[in-house]
Amino acid sequence: MNAQHPDAPTFADDALTPSARQPFSRRRLFEFGGAAAAMAAVLAACGNDGGGAPGRVGLAPTTTALPTATVDDAVFLRTLQSLEYSTLGMYERFAAEGGLEGQAAAALERFTTDHTAAAAELDGLLGTVGGTPFACPNPWYEARFFGPALDNIFGGTNSDGEIPVSDDIPRDVLTMIWALESLATSSSLHFIPQLSTPELRSAVIALGAKASRRAATATLLRNPAPVGYLSPEIIEADGGEVPTVETEPPATDASADSTPDAAPIVLPYVISTRFAQLTAVSIEIGAVNELGLRYKSAFETPADNAFVYNSLTCDA
Image (cartoon, rainbow, N blue to C red; front, side, top):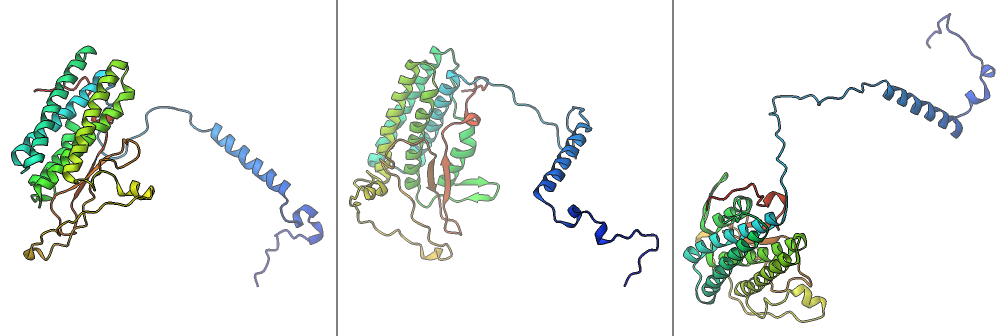
């Protein structure tokens, strides 16, 4: 037992007030809470009100503010035109190395003519708004979407090393044609409500309608009729019967036993949803890697970082 200090005060139970012997009541709790809030206000009032830039820690470089850029009709039209030139550049390579034949080759030739005409039409529209034409591919899409996609079809390199050539170049070329035409469609839909005049909106609507027809054609080249017409999800939701076709199993290479089989590639449909969508266009292309996977990407509709601003020049 610990001995009590002789000078320590002593209290008898009778000396305690009734409130001290009882547990906290709600009133006492509110009293203490109010006192704590008042103390916090006093401390805040006594704080340092001095402004100034926050301090820097470490050796990080100073940041430079981005220049202010005006987004107007010219920017929207220049962005659409840049996508036309990106598409034309890829179609030129597809025609030379894609291995397309018959109807697919004829469609690619027709599509190239259409995009050449669309680029020229956008040139004229830019003249009506005082904009400067941009006869070059879109830098943002080229670096982040189109370049890597081409490397996974025809082979290339990246930070991880060599990218093998696709195991089916014509298949992946048709996939890319469908994706590019679908992106042209959704990009037109995306910009229509942002354009300032009925004349510009009408012209871009027409460009989007033509792209939509090309996307439908490309779909049926990649996923032939009748299966390619309508998404099975829509058919089943309406109580219909999903059509099927006989397909041959993919050829296998006995020497490639170490590579696992890839999951089936999701095919496009002419009508995949009940209403037109502005969602990303997803692709799956390229050779199968050691995990049984192919290269996947999603082409988003143009946003601020992909816009071709009026300050951006083109050397074409």
